[in-house]
Image (cartoon, rainbow, N blue to C red):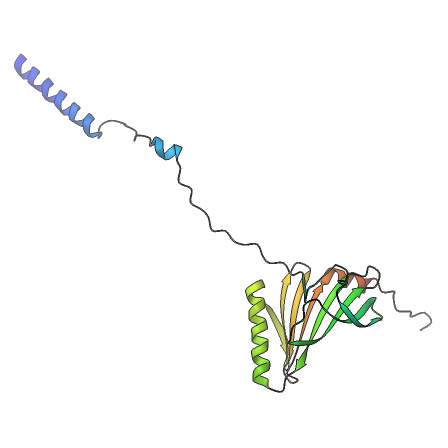
Length: 200
């Protein structure tokens, strides 16, 4: 009987020793990889570039005085509180033959820049030119807003209070491009004196 008991105890010891070796009957924690902690792998996240701001056109910046290098052809004060100036900008473009800038009459800073395109006899050339300008601004500023009717369409790109609008007059094969500081433009518009209705 004593021999049987000793045999059973021996078998239990063997079984328990085997379980400890396999880890199935113990609460062993996996070994910590020290190298992984001291030299962690950093996965670089994709960097998204900031949106490109709209600052102006033809080398002229919104909200700033007209560059002294501009050649002025004519200037007149409008009833809306602006100086309308026909000029040659620092950077010209062959698509446009007339350039007009509107200055805040009180601060003498640029509120709007306009480029007026030539009139195309060849409608296919007109379409090619329009498409190239739209593609350029899409590449720089992203997808545009679009509107219009009856052959006159506009395409607008916005950044905060600044926007660029390309307008096409399909019946005339004519393009106009404008860049505006909306806050500055609206502030001048709001500063107009009220219309005199006294005695009416």
